[in-house]
Amino acid sequence: MRRIHRLHLPEPTQQAIDQKQADADAKQVSGVLNVDAEWKASRQSQPIKNVLGVLQKMAGNRQRCMYCGDSHGNDIEHFWPKKQYPSRMFRWPNLLLCCTECGRFKGQKFPLGNGDPLLVDPTSEDPWQFLDFDPTTGNIVARFDLAANDWTVKGTKTVEVLHLNCREAFAAANQHTHRRLKALVEEALQLPNIDATTLIAKLREADDHGLMGWCFSGTGQYIEPFARLRQVHPEVWQACLQALI
Image (cartoon, rainbow, N blue to C red; front, side, top):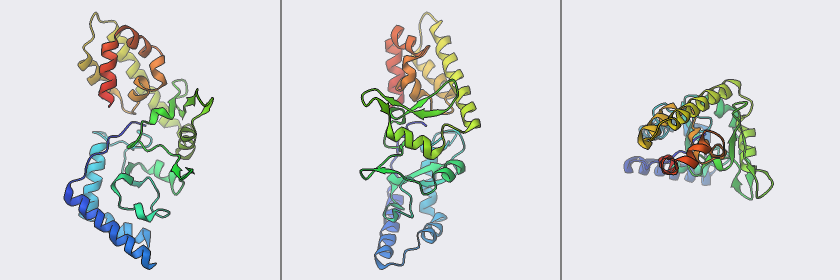
């Protein structure tokens, strides 16, 4: 899972979905809102098609699912499920790009703690503060919080709901990406001088599954060869970190 930076919608699109939400809210108050029918009727409208286009742009050239980062994102996902939370059905901050498998796993599951989501929203927080990558298995697992002396609750629930630790093809793809990133850093460390711009470009091209975040801001920074890059070339390291912001 990679950190996704949410873009602004074009003003006409934003106004259009705000109006759709206002209409849905009015129907909800009147007791006549059918959430599935409302969304289905709007799904092929131009404003929602525009929303999908912006989400695809946010997801990058490969348009990967914003949850797993592996499969192609093919539809709009409601982070807060629209059936339980119809007041968020057309709210821009609630809309993500999701693959079929993650959508099926998540469904209507949405664990809360003190009223706050216990799933990672990659458009509002750094996933690697809650998640970890296991290079041995290729699985995404919960990150261990040393201060709390326990696994992060948000990481645990996200892994559980999306099955991030038991998807064989997903794990194999993660391992492949990790090997590529590791090889690029090892190759750079053999050079007398490292051009940060060139290295970042190569890493981004190789990062099919959003593991740069784990390598440079997650626990991967303490593992070779990333730990050595951080120690020997701190200026290059900082440039890589800046590239993730």
